[in-house]
Length: 282
Image (tube, rainbow, N blue to C red; front, side, top):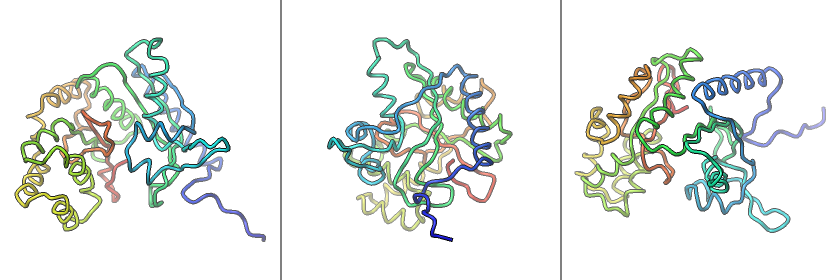
């Protein structure tokens, strides 16, 4: 047999049996999204690199994007995420749109990362965006959509959990720990890597960032404090709203949830597989 040209590293082929599962998931995402009043939308797979340089993280732009120069000399990227495209599209028609906007989409994205189990360079992402309201209750709605998906497919709180925190709470804590404002982005990124490094390497990184032993101890105590959310101005209202929706069992507070992008300034959350052997963000 002649040599067969392989697919590009980090991508996947979808034969009919895999496509059946993908279509089932897509239909389920549509069902859950529309049950909360969200409308489907889509953006181009190709965007100007300039858009991501302005709206996304430096790591995404410099290290993880698929970038090429088109025949007209313009720098183009395969979209690594959707938020910059969302911002562009809303800005283009901001005088025509009626807020609040409830938009959802599901499609492919690309990041030039090291392929690993459960993480490929080409991946599919469900985006659910509520634009206009700025309140703990609107944040709770966003989380509730995700929790409802888990509940609909039969996943229990013993198998999946949505970890929630707030960047404003983190910033207040770092200020109390006397972390200089110019160092907080790097310290936040360090906290975000806690589960990706060994304890020794993580603590060594703290010293490289200039944190004292006292500051390191305070950060570790903060991460262990499960009641810290009660000191937040927003999170008590958030958890009350989640409770009123009957989804409290799926949601818990975790001060270590940071999210890496600089445009995250309020409530942040991640869903984790907690019942099996993997125990990672999903």
